[in-house]
Length: 213
Image (cartoon, rainbow, N blue to C red):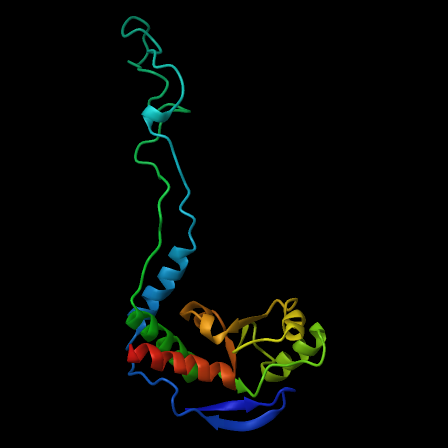
């Protein structure tokens, strides 16, 4: 598959063919991608919501009214679930929402996300990520020259220099990520993805390593 290639300063350098880029049949991996995205969101949940059942509510267990003669309902104690401040029936308790996916599902989901973005022409390449000094203006000019209309840009590389990280941290429409730390959700949420050549090589090599296990 061919991608547009840019130099370090954001000027066009033609196209580059990546022969090892993943290829999938139409529709394959869609369910795996859905599962992976759900798992990412589920694993971010704290799971600390907690309510008290009737036996855990603090207070007297004395019957509020006598059983007969007052013209009111037959009430028990104040801990009853229908009373304000009482217990909660079938309420939430602290729990873990973590979901685990096997390696084949994760790999297929990542491939599906990459293929979809590549087919939509949302993936481009850059020779390397670098700026001369830690200034947001330099990084903004670089991103603007590569993806002038993008609202969410994902810059992917193998490593980032300190100056480059400092220049990118104040730009709200761009985010940095190492290739080895990518998730399918990162790919799906971006409308323009810019890989450094080394970053793409690392990601594709990771697919090969997982396939060989």
